[in-house]
Length: 264
Image (cartoon, rainbow, N blue to C red):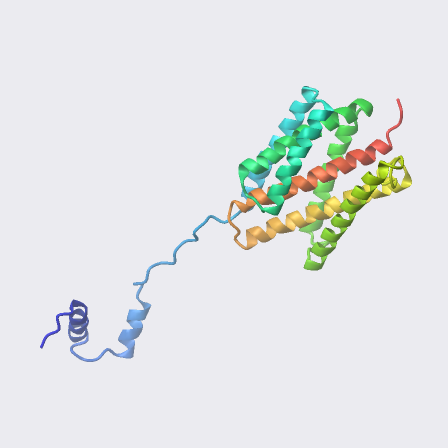
């Protein structure tokens, strides 16, 4: 009795007609296996990050920061407004850091408010020490280029142990800054970490070095993200990290240079 299953009938007819009614041989089975009858592998569900993504978004974020800083400089933004902008930038930065956010609006918002703060502070410093802002910008650019060269040449390799040391050093440094701030309420200059003294010079130099190590971690994170096929939106978080490190280095270079400016 003939089966009513069309699939079974088609397979049976194929076996009778294609192989002359005989059972399929290993050669026939191999030819069926080799035939391109399977579907091609599906493409990734998301576009992976490239170095171009980081460069483009880097120009956007740093461009927003520089434009905001220039506007604050030109408009002579007052210190209270600058402090308010710094607090808003701090809140946005903490949200972006702890949530590992890739939200462009959040990161660009941080850049704008941070730029207002940097522009106001830079304007004040320039009024006291003409030429210091250009020197600080050049110093920051040199630090960026130097760390990039160190990373490219693999002079210092980023390892889990190095990451732990850098994070521990940053926590210790921020703790010392907080203690110094509290102590300054009772003693002029606090612990002396931010004064024009040998201790102050050394601490600022260490803070610049720490910022450079964070920059090294940022470069490694970008490289690993590209190699491991991270989503393209991760470029926003990578650029955010770079911006934090560059702002850190710029402020510390600006402070260190102010110690060595002669009186007019």
